[in-house]
Length: 125
Image (cartoon, rainbow, N blue to C red; front, side):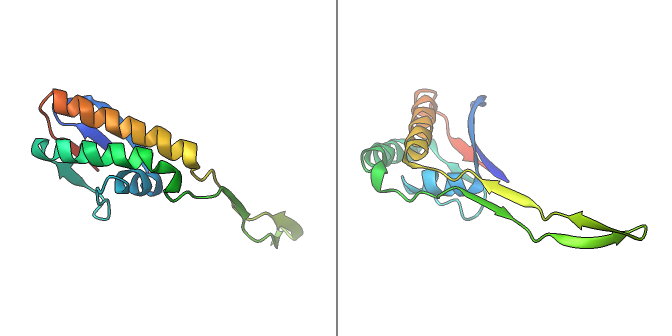
């Protein structure tokens, strides 16, 4: 699943992150993503932009997620009387490193700046 953050008056200007990455990046300036959707009023933008700047300067201390590569168990099934090996599902999570956090914070900061210039609110869902 993912969360898209978009400018109300210019919906084609948006960023999209996985739920986990959105929680990390949007949480840095104090945006709560636990409800899955929300709004940022135009009046809140200056405060959030200030928080985003602070978060950018402190980004090297923000939580990251290490990459993982996990496979489910392999099973032997009998299909048409023949033993068949069925490999488990492989799940690869690329994680998010410090550079990824900083890049995404810059994207969010830019989006908030554009929204402020347009005197528009921002929604995310």
